[in-house]
Length: 201
Image (tube, rainbow, N blue to C red; front, top):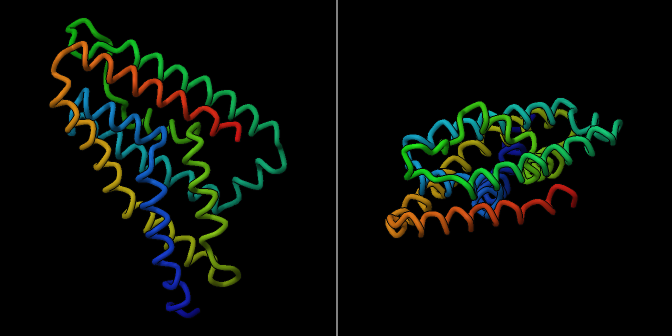
């Protein structure tokens, strides 16, 4: 195996990982919401959960999870319905959240919630499918290139997650008024709902 052959994928992997993860999607919308409402420290479990969840999915797809969906299309349909239902639930929760209230049940997404959310996140599936199919090499180069993709995807996308939390935290400076924060949360909830068509695309 020639190392240079595998490393030739590096520029494409970095470019794809950053561009795909930096653009708006369910994860980024939720990170911006969490950054604005709860701050960096309380959003860290959310960030780590995304990374662990996507890494587990990435490895599962490399091991053949995608073929399972091809063999049993009903699994994909069930997952799509569950995904749509959960995203609607999250949007309603965000829209109703009152983080400034002492009686509020609003809280940042936990590590396990963020990790499991990747299973119903349509953008996560789309990104990982591209990594597994278009950004791996055939034959004896498959696993070295696939594992390189896992490493690069995590290293390149982690700063993107922090960026979206920072966006939310920056906006928090303009959202000290409870009414403004409420409107911001409504916008975030609406944007989350706009990702629903991705599930059935």
